[in-house]
Every structure is written in C-alpha cells, then in structure tokens.
Length: 581
Image 1: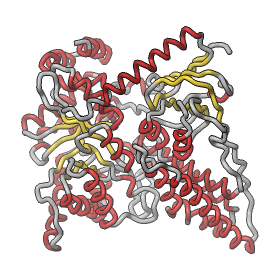
Image 2 (image 1 turned 120 degrees about the vertical axis):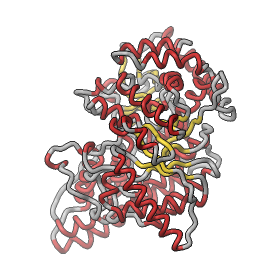
Image 3 (image 1 turned 135 degrees about the vertical axis):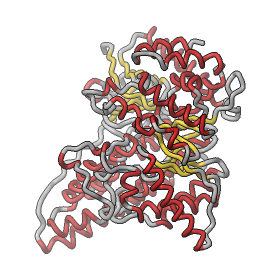
C-alpha cells in the first residue's frame, strides 16, 4: 500500500510495529416502538434479565484476570459492575418503560442520551470522559436485550497485532492485553478515559481520536503506532521501519532506566528535595501511584461520589470512601479536594440550583465548586465532617477549590470549625491539626495570595483553570484553543506571585495541574521556586529524571528572566535554553 500517515492523540507512550486487526463492533440498530399496557410487565422483566446478563458477562471477565497481575485491572471491571447497579441505568429506564410505554432498548437509549449530554457539558476533562463508561455499559445492556454478542477480539490470534477500532471498552482492553496485543488505535476516545488509563497502566502504546482510521487501514497492513507523538503510519519502506525498530529498542531501555528511579529520592543535582505526588480519583489511580513510587496523593477528587444518583451521599458513605483511600496509602500523605462541580452537572436533584446555563451563560463562571458548597451548607458540612473523620486514620489535608475571595475562605473555615465542634461533642476522633489549603486557579486568588495565606496552611496551583481563566480561552474550543498558552508571561507571573506569597507566609505551595506533569516545564518551574509537584502517575518517573538532572541554582536566573518576557513565543525560546543546560 502507499505510505499513509494519520494523526491522533497519543495517550500511552511507546512505539509498536505489527499487522493490523480491524475490530468492527457490530452497529446496533435500536428499534423504537410503543408498548401496549399489557406488555409493560413483560418488558420490565426483559430489561431486568438484560441487566443480569450484562452483569454476568462482566463478572466472568473479572474472574479471568490472573491474581498475579501487576495492575489492578479488576477495579475497571468493578466500576462497570457498579454502574449496572446504579439507579441511573437500572431504575430510570424502567420508569420510562412504565410512564412512556417505551420498549426497553428505546428507554435505555433515551437515558443514555440524557446522561451523555450532562457529561458533555462538564468543564472538567477528566469527568467529561466518564461518558465513555456510560456508552460502554449501555452498549453491553443493549446487546443483551437484542441477544447479540460483541465480536470484539473474536480473532483467534492477536499476539503482536495492532487493533484498529472505532472505540474500545476497558473490558476489550483487558481481554486484548491477555492476548498479547501490541498496540491499539481508535477513532473515538480521549486521554482521560478508563480505556486509555488502563492502556497506560498496562504499558500498551495507544493513539485515540484518529479520524477515519477504519476507512484507510486494512486487515494485515503493517502499522507503526507512535504513542508518544500520536502518529499512525502505514506503507513504510523497510529502511523507515528499521528506524522505528531502533526507536522501540531505545524506548525500552529508557523505560527500564526510569523504572530504576522508583526507589531513589527525588533530589536535584544540587541537593534540593522535591516532592513528587500523584493526582487520583479511582482505585486504579492509587495503584498506579504506588507502582511509580509517588510519595503520596496531592489531589484526590471527590466528585465521583456525587455523580449520577438520585440523592446526595451521606456523611457515612463519604467517610468510608475517604478512609479506604487513607488506609490504602499506609501513611503517605493525602490531599482531599472538596466537591468541585457546577450547578449544571448531573447532581442529585436536591442539590441543583438555577445557574443560567440554559440561557447560554457560561457554567465555568457560575455557581460551581466552593460557590456551590457555600450555598448548601448542610451538604458541605457533611463532606467536611467525613474528611475530618478520615483524618484520624492517617495524614490528610483538605483543599478548597476555585477560591476567588478571602470571604469564601473565611466562610469555609467557619463551617469547618462548626464541624470540628460537633465531632468533639460526639466524641469522634479526628486530626485537630489537619492542614487546610486552597486551589489557586482563579487569577484573583493569585493576586491576593498574600491575604489568603494568612488563613491557610498551603496552596496548590491548578494550572488548567488558571490558564483558561487568565487567557479567557477554553482549551477544548477549537476556535480559540490556540490561546491556551501555559507559557504565556501572564500565567507565569501569576504562578510566581503565588509562590512568593507562600514563601513569605512560610506555607508550602504545590502544583496539581497538567503543567506539573509535563517534563518540558519541570526545570522552568523548579527555577521559579516550585518544590512540590502532583501529576498523573504515568508522568512521575520522567519528571523525577528531570529533577535529578537539574542544577536548580543554575536555572533560577534564566527562569526569572522568563517572567519579563512579552510573549509565549519568547518564553518558549528561553525554555529551550533552560532545558539544554
């Protein structure tokens, strides 16, 4: 075939070379028809049976996972099993069958569309891609309703092959890993989906979002997948293939060298200790953090407890979830971020408030995160009490998101003090000196960081929102995402203001946004004074390598000079010189 180059998003690093196996999921033709009243009970039974079949299929897959596997694969399957039990998928479709007399497939499709629309509206990229899990679970139920078996992975020998598909579920990926798949390419998917998280954990090179891959790639084509640069290449000459094979060998050696760093301290070449922690939400994140030697969790998201349910999680449910994480870390520090969702999200009905999103207003600028929590003091206090109680089991810090004013901090601290007094009166144990901090992700918060520092024990810079709000550009909006510039001097100056305020007040400042996990920025951030990074676990070994090879004193002056630059392009050129030291 003629040479072909396709571009996507590299989500799991590494180079793979192998023959293509095109995986065609049978497209489901969802029938929509109205039931007679006498048919409703039978339709409900049919739906319930489909739920049981889907659950049984996942349970069988889970049972096939070797207990010796180094990755907590079972947790991915467990998350889908839990979704089958959630009322959003188990009860709401049955209500639609009763009330609208929809057939089961139609009712399930209506509920899926409603859930996907909610996730699509979310600001947080990590939470937004949870819609993929909804799609995968719904498809499994639909196939059970229609008595269809998914043909994913039906090929008899996948060892060393590269899978090309429209999309893959975590269940597909688990099965393929056991069959020795070399890599996968999908037309759909994103960098934070469970499938791509699993691919990274298993070390399978992967590129997603490759438009029209199924149109151009054929069965048995020899394909090169470059997960580092998001490239998919076919029809290469033997000499070009040999160059990629050499890349494979070099990458394997590099990964082996990085693995050796796990037990070594994160100390710069001139002796400065640098804390490297992980961002986490689910069990698989914690497992990945342990594998790469993270010294704790610098950002633990709590939104998963509040999504897709008919009522708020109570204090006890939250406490048990947080305590489980604390105990699994076995003494390593844990920073729990309080609820960071907006009023337009799929929150329990008793928490939703009018946000103006329906009128076209920007939900990112509305009643989200700390603003939402302070408007519902009872809900917020239940979470504060749960976090306080979990602090009795290990080192826990509490972090407030999207702070913009000193008054918000004072309000939150007042509620926290009330929670402490209640727990004392009830005789419940908690860490009375639990550190309290806030996210610096709104430019106004960075500019008044010195005032905020008088009330708090630490800061954590959330660069994703800080850049977005500073540049007034949504990084997911293709019309303006060229303005999403981490190296813009304005962004760097806000980071510098925050770091200086922390040093002056004697409180630590960490960074938990994506900049913290980008090795290209590590030396610049060290030069600006950052000494605590929290990131996706997969990025930690490479960042540690950069830390260990950096003479911080030598890069400080060049980093300070970048603050005086006039453009991101000028900073980019300075960064090249910093990284060449």
